[in-house]
Length: 161
Image (cartoon, rainbow, N blue to C red; front, side, top):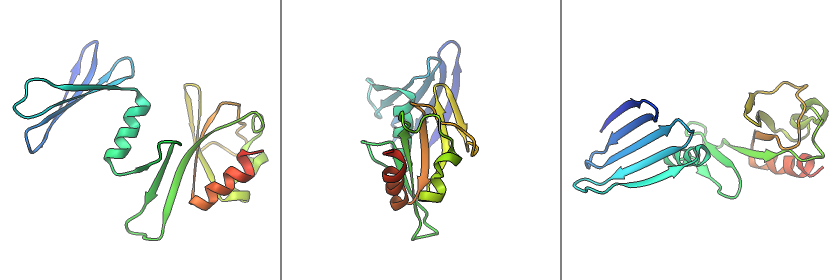
């Protein structure tokens, strides 16, 4: 199983993987931010192509690595093999008008629900591990982590206000 990468001036970067069955998978990270994926079956002359947005590529990557995805919400559930009873979920939520202008400390999310906000995406900016005084704006996308019951409580107690 060989993996090669090539920088293509003006286009982006190409990664090519040859499988044990001699099929070829090529992934192009384009300068415009999109990703193209080509597959060519062994002894075939006609490749198949799919163009993905960055978000779609991340979803596909999560699927290929075995993460459990729920298509209706941006979420991933992680089960740790060494800790058989530990399952954590990461979910994304969009901040509404009612939460806008409030900080993490104002909302007391962790104290009330056990959920931790680990990242916020605002426009083109991502804030990882936002501080307690971080104020939300309407439309912010947040990544929350916790056990399933904690996230359900977060949705009931915090997100519906």
